[in-house]
Image (tube, rainbow, N blue to C red; front, side, top):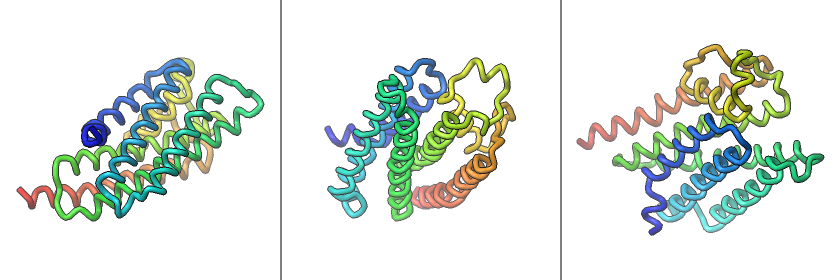
Length: 223
């Protein structure tokens, strides 16, 4: 059963579905479901890492990750349904920081696993694709937190501003920045957001030219 739940293809599928829902969702309930999917994906990655890579994921690290994921779910619930309006910004910042930390840790450990692989299989390639998408997800959490605190940090095309929600725009902007497409309909105006978006583009480019290129060369050599 654990083999099925921690399958690389399932994790990639859940990641892609989560991204799509994050871009098209219109209600806070849908946003909560999106975050549930994101956190479920991270939980499965933690279990996969513990199940197959004991030298990287320990009992303690998995317990801490799952505990943080649980607290984020509670924080998101309080935030999206405004149960404590006077603490809304606190829940927003806490949830954002924990998501960034948890997904960042998952991404770094996945990179460590990929870098140590002497041979490459289809599962390895799928894990590498998932890790690439994780870059966009991590930065979308950063952009969303900034967006909610200071919407003026971004310039948005007027028509899009009324059509889309902040979480739609954050994920969309993160992915077009990661892929260096840059349509120009959304761009940062705050200096620190400019720095963050530049770093995202650089991390994405370095990932493709170093990690993915290495895996592809190993995969080609094994054929």
